[in-house]
Length: 392
Image (cartoon, rainbow, N blue to C red; front, side):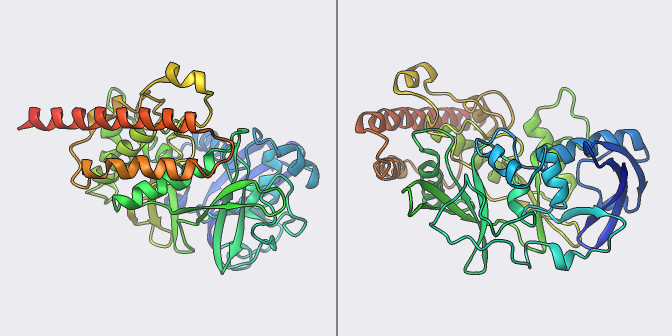
């Protein structure tokens, strides 16, 4: 059976589209109502076929990841055949942006459905994160429209929307890494999402907590959509991103992006893909406000490597933001005014202090991680200083 849906941005109708309600396959886009309100990155003005291709990709990235180890539990609870079905039944609502959709045969209002204003979860913090979705969540929850392979859930804590994140690996290092990165960024007074460490009361399992970085009046656009809006063949991705920001009203973003590149190299962040950085815009006027605060830093410090693999991977790590290597990304940045080598010991002290709280990590491993970080700091300083001297 074919069902027609309406995509909205808050209360504003944006687009009509049809889906098969058995396999939730996008069949066609029937009408563009407000082109300027389409999700950023849908760029083929007037070409409905290309709009459909891009919108289908946009939908595919909106639901919960089927790679999550608790996905089968969630799918069975809600009697769904796929992540896409879960997302459609939850109206595509999340706590990242203000887009949602519903069957045109029903009258629905943003003010009654959105998670910035409305309650969605009765979970008691500390009693459990995932794997088992709390019985109070039901289908009206942002937890069915949150990406990533790590177990996550949104809760409401002291009226704030708070994201809890678990671990993918048995060492459970990722929550500690989130806090380490947050403390390092605080030390250098760099804008970022603040993370804290908690544990479940029943199984003493560590997880991180952070507040939502957007509000009912702002929303996040990831770098992938920013960079896909115009062709940049043979152009450096870093240069293209800065140019797109400038074109959309953000003139001084280089220092913010350079801060992210510096952090990623020093801690060895292996997961700074284009969904993990971007911009914040006004959800009402669509004005670009600023670069998003640095977030999602848990996949670092050899989080997924055994001790004997650490020498194999060495100093460099995979860099997914603007190239293949975090070390190569250093070529783009200038000597940062915020950086001081007087803080080097502080960085390693933070790493040691928080990794020591993880009973699954031995002192030998912590010492090895710190030795690699010290070497990265030295390389970072030498690389930037060499560039500074060459330009003077």
